[in-house]
Amino acid sequence: MTPSLTLILGGARSGKSDYAQRLAADRGRPVIYLATAAPIASQFDPEMAERIAAHRQSRPADWQTVEEPIEIVDAITRRARPNDVVVVDCLTLWVSNVCLAAFGGEAEGEAETVSAERWRSLETAIISRTESLLNAAAAKRLALILISNEVGLGVVPAFPLGRHYRDLLGRVNQAVARNADHVILMLAGLPIDLRRIALTPSPFDRDKDFP
Image 1 (cartoon, rainbow, N blue to C red):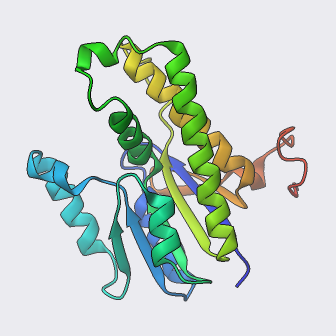
Image 2 (image 1 turned 90 degrees about the vertical axis):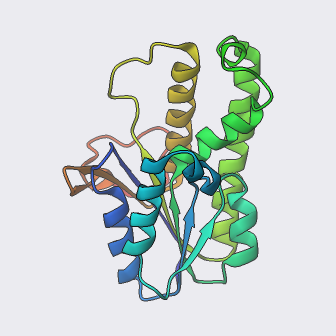
């Protein structure tokens, strides 16, 4: 199977996961569903527990579910076989988990005062992990489907930690989109193929075909 990369973006309840599942099922190949929600979080958050349970029930029984909040590259390397379909749901939580792990030993107030230099270092590390994810998928010729939120369209976060996270996730989304064969924006359950409607090629995408 020809390897492929699809990025699915959207806001909350825009239909991202449902569309990703339909896309994965249509491939007709074994599917690994890599969930990045930390299972331990559901022990203290009933709403999160309900969301995780609903997601589990919505997946076909023959799909393999892997719950890994941080080491997604390692999970794909160990669990995926050549030509598998892998859905990562989602990059939004993955970036959050990596950030929380990086600042895990600090109180909330201290995390708000993290230096710009430290944020730049974390950004470099996460972008490097993102590139490793794409390389690992290409090496196994996977059909990789990545889900992420578009968080830059809402109100500017009130606190530095939120603004830094918003910027960091945006850069991760851009890094994936530059390499993606398909970039789908979900609005009210409707998929919009951004590559098909792009009017002008991005300078980062000179090797991509545009209509």
